[in-house]
Image (cartoon, rainbow over all chains, first blue to last red; front, top):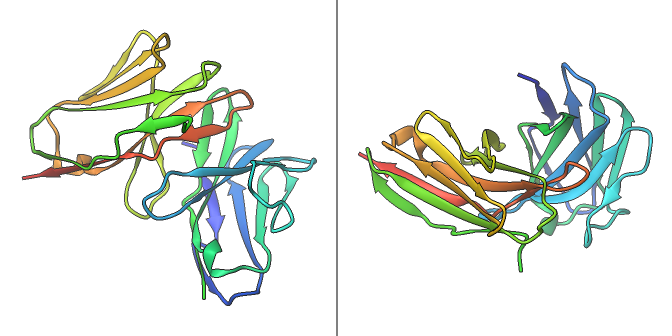
Length: 114
Length: 109
């Protein structure tokens, strides 16, 4: 099956710093990738839709200036959490759309902001 | 009202039991329907797609009722390894997936 990787798998950073998370589709090209966030005991919440070569589309309530998304190639999308705060601590998961209804999830990145 | 609603459980059942999960969705324009499984601290993994005609995969049976906007998952002969959180997922235009909060299943020996 298709593989999607994320890096890093976990990160601890200090409040006020920025963290970049990479999402790569390893064996297929993805024109669209999605970024989700999951707090403990909560459902995955769609944050934004990342389209290759164009600006990301953010869901209501997600600050685009805080969560910077770049989809520079057909296999890579990055999410940068700028000026991170403890309330940004969460499990961030990307998924890559392959076509039809096929969507493949990365293993997730656990962010802890101290 | 949440776009996808599930009973959070937990459902605690013995091995061999049959358990059913229900889900409702609010957007009648939803186009695709899935059940995902998520283990603790892991990414969700596709369990099965759900079709109006109903579909079965081994011990798992999924049903979709578009008129009622209702989705179900039936697990027969539960195994210890079935313990996980089961996510009801609905796809909308543009292929974004909307996740329910999940139903936790715990199967005990």
